[in-house]
Length: 632
Image (cartoon, rainbow, N blue to C red; front, side, top):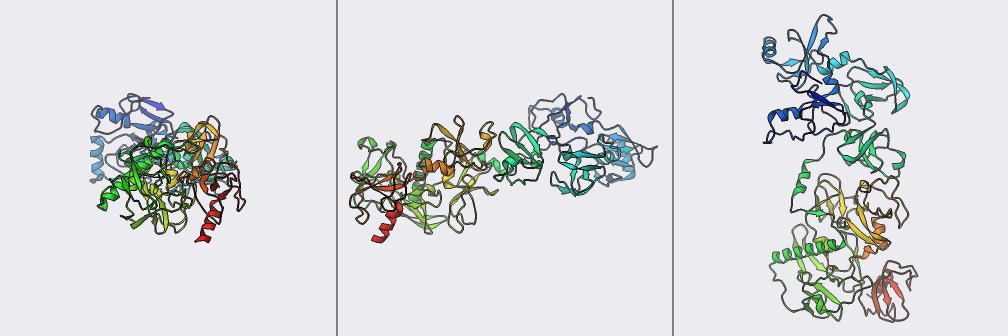
């Protein structure tokens, strides 16, 4: 269409995706993507222009054209408007103030402070929207008031709406102050509204006219569909808005995608705000990006963290790094440890899974670098782990002592990752922390969350829960979490290091880490855990194989793949506990259905002491601990 407010022809765009800052040149109101009937300049349609004057390749005229947008209703406003109180007086539609208009206005008001004669809203002398003026320019009416005075709705004044089909709705054509049942906004919005003739149901007309589906900038895979309440299918678990992350009410209007299980508040889905300012921090090249690729990458990055921490600690305490070929280390006082140049010099005895030699300090694989070892005891340490001082002075935690259980079968539970461990740990106010969890960097970025995550070593505070696994952190205990300083988002130490893909003995394909259900294409039915047979709450994380449609809760994945004990080094032999068993025992992970010789409980997937003689008896860790207590 040709419009007198713009020099170029305008074209109607029925699927316009609004950007932040887009406003109608007619009424000055924000343009929403879901109200998609927008006129834009035909000469610039389809061109991506940022709208900043700093763009050297874009002319000022092009920027002006790119910013020129009109709601369909504003573009079709009548050129004249008849004064409702004086039929002989006509008001003319004005797009800008000419010198003649400004001169005429100055005769009536030297300060050029103009107000709408109906609503008293002040109009600047350089208006950014349309107005109606009378012939003498001594009377002005804003667009909103003209609409309310002249609008003749096509709808029946009393009609039904699918969101409230039990009663008739009456069209209220004057501005009203109320809390809209649809968008929950409670303010003086200058909009027509629908009010129920029999109950308190009341919604804005613009909300009633919202499309049943539209393409949203927050979810570009499929159109979002309007629902007047949360569908019953999704009531089993709480659902959260994909835009603001707040919980959804089951009775509120929402937009959602059933294919991707994406939900958004009715008002959030129509918003133009994409990100918060702090998201720009994630562009820092020095910040590590998670999740890691696979288990091997996780081990390598853990080892990198530990080495970096030990180097920093050693330099802070002014201690010389170990360079001797034979050392007496505090974690293995029985024998000296010898420096070994590579694993090629040592014939490795691998376990049933063929894993590499593990360090007794950080319980990570030892590569071909130099390391210290006691071959007769099968006790080995990375060179960096051997360099760890016994006592360190931490910036936040003060003086902390490194320690290690003498018996390899005496495990501790790390208060950061919740895993059972038997390597070197630090006592943080009597709560053990695995050396790998102590070494995590201060700030990281994870794809599952738009903000930076800070490693909180102290972590006091009640009722925090991990967004990934849903596990609640103990009240009043010292815990380490990775948390967002902008919102209530916490990830425990175990989940933050979960790899993007992981292998499971029940599937020939690698399983993929899913931290939002839309990562699985067109999966409308519930995700069911293969291990526990329970439905999976897709607000958390889980592992999934699309080829086999097989899924696991995170804890079920760990339990069924023995990942619960990934930080435990097994294989210690010649363990003698006279009161428990007369033969020597070996510390192993039991992968068969067998019962403890003492308490008779099944120990499938549990660490046990196994008799190496033909009797093949096993003993669970509880019975081992009880017997150790008796001996103590």
